[in-house]
Length: 366
Image (cartoon, rainbow, N blue to C red; front, side, top):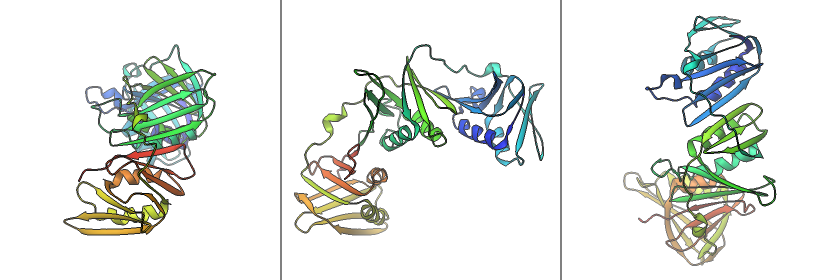
């Protein structure tokens, strides 16, 4: 194998696939990147057996071939080496890199040991803009469970109809939903699937460098996301996502609207004084048109910060996880609506001028 490519192109490709390598000591080949120069394409591939990522790198192929290269060594080398161009060749199982500033040899492994990347034979396809997919996944994945005990909530639920895509995630303590309008299939067409949150994080990272359209192919137990630059294959989660619509409040005991910036300023101050449970308390007073946020830490002190705004409904005192509230606010803009279902019920947050996204948090019992 021998090819010539721009160092920056190879560096970008390596850094994209490196985080998808496996860390299982029983399968050391998973900690390598498969470098392939075939059929006029230079391809870098990494897999952790749950997902696989292929990134295409531009360059000139002089001799076809395949080799597996330790990801950590390759990533460190390509990030530090100088020069504009890299010549890569394989000799006796060793990978030689020649740049404008020197020569490096990395011990490679046989490509035959590298796991086969699954190929789909039958699939259902739809297109979606990469920037829309990335934003939607990022907006809701903050609410996904970080535990694999219940795999159906350690994922993002994606449901599509002819003219609407819905993304949702929950960890049982909070819930986020994003809706996107578009054309995703023929009339009467619908699909839904559960994408593991690890795959979601990998995909959003890949999409940071590729804002074009994404072709999504759904097959038996797996999904493929492909752009002009990369292809990512992920397994799907089996099971059913919770019927979350029944907990979305449609009426509110108390509600108010306040600028996101004012809310963030209040919460950041209160956050300095949160205790081990990360709890903050909202006291909402319709009579005085005042919102007060309280936090107390036995080792640090206490804080009360308030803002004035019209309030509809009953006076209320209710506590929430500080970090959960902050996570939801990060995905909103302008004036933010806070709707409280009851003194013991969920809080619904959304931007005043954007009903396509909402975020729900369950209260804490202190």
